[in-house]
Structures are given as C-alpha cells and as structure tokens.
Image (cartoon, rainbow over all chains, first blue to last red):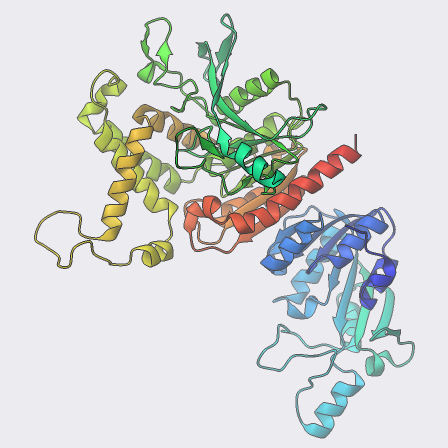
Length: 200
Length: 382
C-alpha cells in the first residue's frame, strides 16, 4: 500500500491535515473510508482512530490498517477519557448528528481542540435557488433533496460563529473553502464549507 | 500448480498431543492439581525461524482442536475451515496457526473422561472444576512446549472469545493482538439460565448416574436435549423462519407426538449427532467454566483491562441475541477508557450467534487485514 500524499487528498482534508500538529493523538468522528486518517497516520505520524457508522467503510478502514469503531456519533464519544485526544475531527458530520450541542460538548471534553467542518447552507447558489425558484436548494455542495438527505440540521457560517459565542467556545482558526479554493471575503455568501478549529 | 499442492497439503491435518512431563502437575485456579496433563492440538502453516508468526485460535463450547483442513478418512473439515488456510483470514502462507482442545473438554485434552492414574478409571466428577483461566493456562503450557513466547494474535468466538479476553489480561506480553468475536466478559443471568437448563437436562437423565457412566450407557437423551436448547440460542428468529418456517416432514399433521415439523427433525438430528462426539460431563464442566467467567469482578470493567497491551479487533453480529452486540460494546468502551488500540465492527447478519462460524466473508475482510497490519507493526517495532 502506498502512503497517501497531501496532494492526493480531498481539498477540505488537506486544510484539516494542515491544522494538525505532527505526532498528535487524533479522533476522526465520521471518518468514512479513512482517507484523512490514513494520511495523518502515514505522513504526519499521528496516532489516529475513527468512529464510523457504515459497515462497508469500516472494512475499508481496517484494510488501511486503521483502528476504527463501528457506531453512531451520538453515543460513540462517551467512552473516551477527558482530553484523551489532541484533536477531535468532526468533518461533514455535525449536520447529521441527533444532538449537535451534546456532540460538540463531548468532543470538547475528550479533545483539547476540535476541528469542525460543515457545509454552509447559506452560500450564494443556495440563496439564489431559494429566492428565485422557491425550492429548497440542491447544489453541488448541498446535493440532497429534502426527502432523501442525511442532514438533520441546516446552518450557515454565521450561525456557527453565533453558536460558538453563545456556548463560550473559543474559535482558534477558521478557513473557508469553495470547491478547491480558499474563500477570503464574505465567506457566508461565497464559501461552500467552513472549517473551524475550536477549543473550550 | 503450486497453489493446488499447497491446498492439498493444507487439507490433510492430524491431531497431535502434548503430554506434560510425568512428574509435573498442572494446578487449577481452584487449587486442585492434575498429574499428566494432556493437550490435543493441531497446527496449520509453518512456524518461522524467529518463532514470531504464531496465531492461537480458541474454540467455543462444542469445538475441538480440529479447526481446519480434513483429517484422514473424514469428510467434514474443521470448525473454522473457511477462515484458516492459504490466502484466508488466518493466512497460513504467512502465519502459523495453533488450535488446541480446552482442558475439561473431551476431544483429546485432559477432561472428565480421561483416565485418573490413581484409580485407573475415568475421572468423572472427580476431575477438578475448570475455569476459562485454566483453559488459557493450559494453552500457555502448550506454547511453552512449542517454544513460542509471542503471539501475533489470539482469536476466537463465543467461549473462544472469553479465552481471548483472558489472554489479554493474563498474558499481555504474549498476545500482541486479540480478536474476541461474539462474546462477553461475563455471562448475564439469561446466559447462565440457558446453560443451567442444559446441565439439568443431562443430570435429570438417569443414565448420568452422578457422572459415573463411562462403563455403562451414557446420558445421551439428556445431552441431546442440552444440545437442542443450545442450538435454538445459536440461531435467530429470522434464520429459523427462513430455514424451516412451518415446513412439515409429512403432508398431514397427525395425532401423535412424532417429528412433524422440519425444525423438530433438525433439532433431533443435531442432538443425536452431538452425543456421538461429546461427553456429557464435559458439557457440565465447560458450561460451568463459562458461567463462572467474570473479568470484571467487583471493579469497574475498565480496571480489569488495566494491564491489557494488545491491539484489539472486537466483532459482534447484529442478530446475535445470545451474545448481543451491547456486550461487545461494553468491552470496547472499557478498553477505550484504558487508551487501548481498539477496532470494533458489528457485522450485519441474520444468522444469530452462529454467524461467527458462518459470516466468514465479512469476518475475513476484518481479520485478514488486521492480522497483516498487526504483524507489520510488530516487526517494525522490533
């Protein structure tokens, strides 16, 4: 098996990979087929593990030599001791958990830093569709129809920042992306994804 | 051609026996000691010069040392044949796989049907009470004899999984990784209850005679009932429904207590074939060992795993109601509280507890890579 290089990674994985200090202990919550974890383990000497709900994805992770737990996020974090991880990654999963407040609180309990990545439901194409066509948006970054979607919560970048403020969560870093580009101005309008590094 | 020759070589296996030195004693957890310990075992694949490629597989209640391949003149392969062999989950091209019959069993290792050298008669109930830890200690003695002091992995399902967990806490320096499958760290009241019904069926058979029956007729009726109960708990409602439903053996239901439904015939067949190969007293001893097994004691479970150093692959099956996934999850949770390296997968299956013997395709996806990666890490850290 050849190790995954940075340039082979999905763009948001690259951003997250850059946030993580080499040699740290990392939990990837909703780690999917383990691409990011594999890169972190092989290239950044990270001690990584994952939580994933799909059985097929578990098989792929084990094939990559990763240590992963089959289970849902809502119950999968309680079993770790306080501050066990340097980083807990929550990429593209928070909008799908039953109780995001509990999930974020648990992540902040078990991890020194938490990296949250989520789709911005208020980016421009979505706003256009909502305003001009009167339909709930279905865009490349928000590909699901209302009747067939894993998403339970719909939030914008502004919403998340407000949430962190009200929960007294400190935002250490924030990066906004659209496709394979970084967005530096008006992220709530232009960014498809927000990636935040937060801490207690 | 090379593959085929290898397969053929693999297919022919024979059971070997370890006989402890004459003057040595094997002492049980209970404090009782046994002279002349004997362990039946089989091995598959080759032990390398470094003696670092060994894997131990542990069998369940009714299993034996014959885990894979075919013994001379037999048509049925070993109980985990789909998992052990060249290119399989326990890849014998790379690993040296050891399987031994548990102490207290009846398939070649010392047990209640062995001859007591003092009386020259079978021990019967005179055989010391056996625990899961005793089984593991006997396996350890076998490994010492084979000159193996590290295991890439210890793996097993059901009672085999209990032995795996015992290895993890008793010999953490030996078990580099552990694969407990469809198992628990302690029997629940329900699990004890099913075992007790099985034991009562045996003891209620007049032929049991307080365990002293070896020179007379055996308590076959009681043992068969115990096995039938066991089989019900190994299947799931849906697997029984799809296998038997209400299919009848005769066209019309009669007015007598004969075997009418397929499921009845199946259970009777299972019971009858079991008594030909299993000893009733062993059934009592081995089920008791499972019921007594309790890694937790009066501490939190995480404290029990404090010394565990192995990597873990914990596997459960969605429809297993005898050893339900929540019991495996408790193990996973306790291991994580200790910062252990754990992988957990709940394989979706309709087969119930039997899934650990049947879902080999899914198990292979996990076990094969887990073993290879463990071995790679183990060699790297040397």
